[in-house]
Length: 218
Image 1 (cartoon, helix red, strand yellow):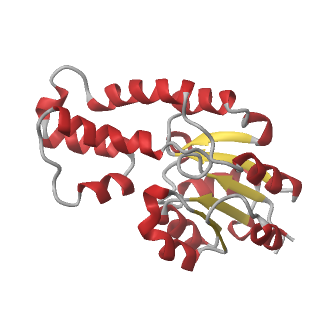
Image 2 (cartoon, one colour; image 1 turned 180 degrees about the horizontal axis):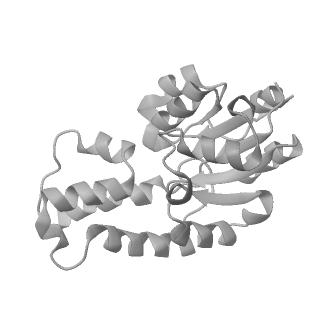
């Protein structure tokens, strides 16, 4: 099948940023002397950080006595994105492979542009993609909204789109629409590996060997 468009996630797919994100809620509870609720570790891996901040602020109002959690966490992560969050090995090779196959390539991230853009520039990713969008602009990848956004904006039908992503719920939502999934391994989602592998057109444990992706793109 000839694909025309690749949508590529940033956190956990191109960038090794999930450890930074996952530390925020746990460290916040620990600093306040609060125990982690049952299922907390799985919850924070599967829910956007802004929803976690909202839910934790509602459950533990004392955590927001001085500053809203979303504001505090955003400031912490802004520093990490601007200075230290790295790309995964071979991430640029992935983008180059997609471009070489003639696809338009857009980063589509749950992270807000104010945080994301400095990392994109610092890491030299901007020249390798056709654009960058955040879910705040397109809607959640767990819904049809972002795929409809690109379909309507670029005139690309779902069956000619790829989504490269580490999060199983995002991949499942895209695949249900006819978008082909390129599953990418991330340590934060390791227990979902078989679920991701089963649904994806291609599964990449890392970016050292892209031959399966290259075959899909032919």
